[in-house]
Amino acid sequence: MQAKRLITTILLSMSIFSVIDKSYGNSEFPNLKGIYFGQKLPGLISEVFAPDIVSINGRYEYGISFSPDLNEIYFSTQKEGGVASIHFSNIEDGKWQPIKKLKLTNGLKAGEMHPFVSRDGKKIYFTAYSSDFTDTKIWTANRTNNGWSNATKLDSPINDREVFYSILAKNGDLFYTDIFKSKTYFSAFEDGKYPKTKEVEIEFGLHPFISPSQDYLLVDAVAKDQNRKDKDIYVYFKKTDGTWSKPINLGSAVNSNYTETVPSVTPDGKYLFFSRYNEEEGLSNFYWVSTKVIERFRPK
Image 1 (cartoon, rainbow, N blue to C red):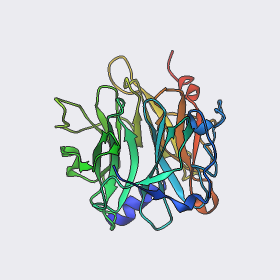
Image 2: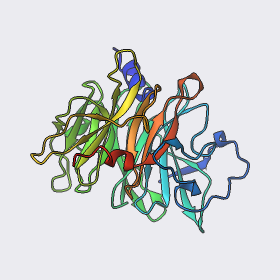
Image 3: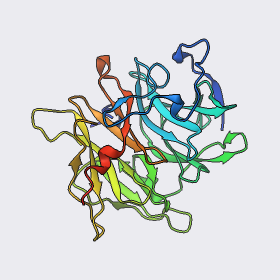
Image 4: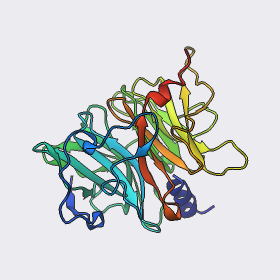
């Protein structure tokens, strides 16, 4: 399968600020206060996150990250047939500011997606790729007084292959997806670098989200029901011997007969975010739900 087609299949079944993105369609951005855009907090049933503000019909939305203090949000979007871009908003003077588009590679790469703010808030990790959907690598940028520095490609054997969706544990270990192998990998953080890569020994799953203490791992994968072709979100729990449990489907509170992909958990550990492809023409919106839906499956 050609690189463009493979990456597109996975993606969609999956410090320079520009002007406000006109696709949001609001002449005046709504007055939103409080964490999570002031949205009503979800319970044990997943709900659309920030409809018509962040979750907007007519495009794909996937890959979302909040700063550790929850005062910033980063997420990626993509129009059908286009390349991905990262969007951003933050709280100033007590309210959320109009959403803007980030260009972290300063035009060096056409597509930018899957942002993840490090757990100390000092770096942002993301995926960038060329206009022909090749050279898909992990990039980073450092926080500055005015936003983010121009990004650079991560200097690591991780980027010897086509990779995406990088998530860091609290100790700095980095988990990611090897695109062509369609497997989850990780690289241990050693002396400020990522010198080695290793496959995560799980049964299946892509778009890994590792918990801060590495006690559980979320992935998406094609539903095991032979009559279905959509993806569901699963959780693995770390066992006392350091291996991973069997994959556990998160059930109807998260999964549906549509595809659910790209799971992530907020820095406060309270909410699970993911994309659901239930919009007309198979596009996706962000959904969120209490992480209690994960904890109820944790072995006693």
